[in-house]
Image (cartoon, rainbow, N blue to C red; front, top):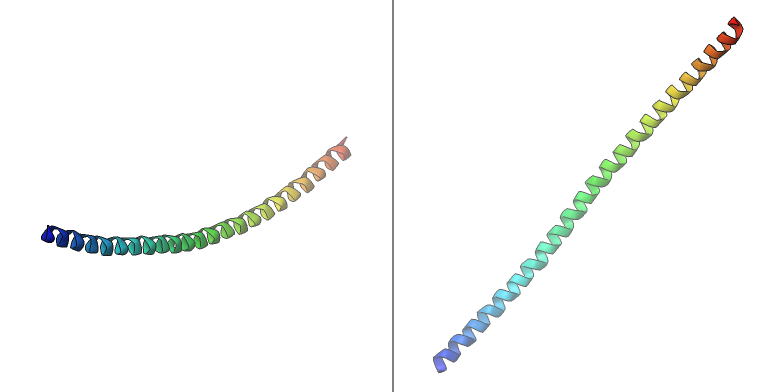
Length: 84
């Protein structure tokens, strides 16, 4: 019984240390995951900003083409009226 008690105490002591270390490892794992998420979100945000800038440039280019086509259409319509 005394030896059994001693073994149980030793087991409990080791289990407590193990559980504490496991808890510390879980906390560190959470910190690592959070930091990785922050890093990824920064690179995602940079990608979104770049895409928005590209979209703005594309929009400007399309608006210029639209304006050019509108002017050309007006010229053609004017020419058609004059030719009548």
